[in-house]
Image (cartoon, rainbow, N blue to C red; front, top):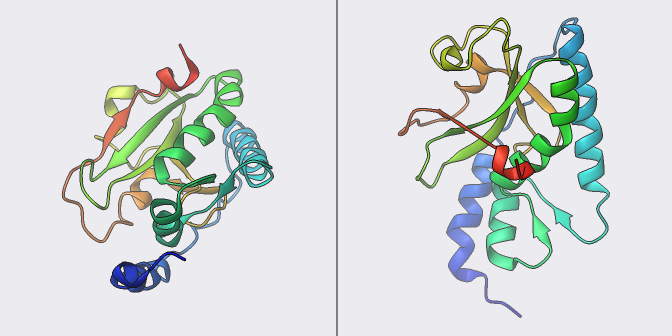
Length: 177
């Protein structure tokens, strides 16, 4: 049996931080394309949960489990990000929107990845981070293991500490494009 005593401080911190996770605010009549993307997001999260060969976890407790036990366990934020991206991409393209990755606190212990979706005809890619109050949405299943959709400006307020500003990630390599 594995001795988990060295991880007890990490476990205690994870329990404390895990209690700080709140769901995003409800969307009041989301725009039609976003409603379609939200549906694809829900279906993607359900499919992830039903995978027979992998065990998906979420949040800080999930990270602790995955990094300690390994094996068929998945659920680090970048793993959620890539699966969510692949799952929603066909719908995002069909409705004429764009999906890209976002990372905050890159290279730190509190680095976090998610997916951003927006209508590129109305919001150019180079303005996404400059004007987070626009109709830009973050798909973040890692925090609760649920298909949570956040307005970008609220998602950027979640971290207790921002040591590295957010940046966008091109996830095209995930699809092999």
